[in-house]
Image (cartoon, rainbow, N blue to C red):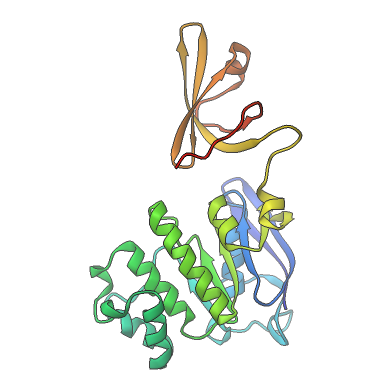
Length: 283
């Protein structure tokens, strides 16, 4: 069990806000942190890692990582941290990056094997692709068999096909090592595929906490689908208006009335819902 009850004042673009998080996380859970940028997700990860100071308590099992008297140093916390920007040592080979964390050749070989990196173990990071670098970063994070694996949007820079492949590898490692994982993500499909629990933050406070379906599903009543996207443009076609909305990797056209047109602004986030149709999956 991980108990988190922390408080920290954050200074953001919209002024000061209080990050107030009170959570209990079961061992082996895969928790996704969701919410808008600036809501405190990354700061929470950094507090758990010991990279930022806060008030309150962090207890992992029977071990106190933080209370009013003690703050355990990052190197003494059994954590693995996977960043967006890989954070690999550029002058070390793939294998050396892993062994720098823990001189455990057997574990190193095993991690390289299950992630398909064995043939690249003598390569330097600057000779690897983005996906290969992120695999190395993930393996390195697992080298000390962490009690807690922290990931800050680790796959956001990768293309969709590669993201799916690495998501599968992340889930495989999470299950094999029995690690408790907390991941920041803005990708609903990634959250649904990987996590068993979603905690949504807004302006430093938890506003939703439940399964991915409970937190992410936005439909109600007779509504069949509901997606959030960015309004890119509104064009007039004959006597109607057509809104161009970016949803994920797709652009969607939606007919809007003249009254709706007056309420919309280019760049705003809108929700697109559909009701009266029978959906088909196209393969």
